[in-house]
Picture: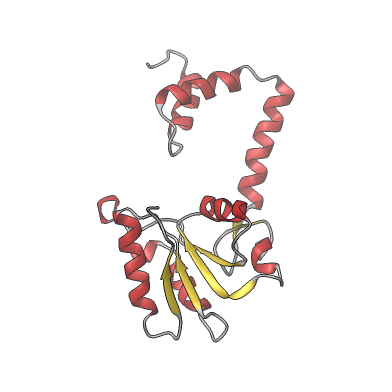
Length: 174
């Protein structure tokens, strides 16, 4: 449904641009925002602006960070011999919630997907290769077991062949 109010339609359109947000959810979000008080609206827009200006990619792992390094890369207690490669920062958060993994991460910010026009050069793969040194002994591929995830994992595994590093795949399908 299109609205005769340009500002409302623009708000719905902006929410709809978000990944996983359909038209009905975008409408609900727009009407929620319209129902906010002026003070709540300022707090909401300030939070968006603050996140947009303060959050960037960690210079080592490409995860989200507010400083030069993310909290995980800065943590001296982490096992620096293991790097878990994931698609996006949400995957880091999901694995961290388990409290079972104590290594480092590398965030690709996507997967190879020729159908969507995404090639290896658009991902943070060169940054992963730059990290490999005598300290890293294992790289765990934790991409999704779908076509794009498998293709990305295989592509990276081939790139890692010349390095003295063990490449493993996260278990799935239990």
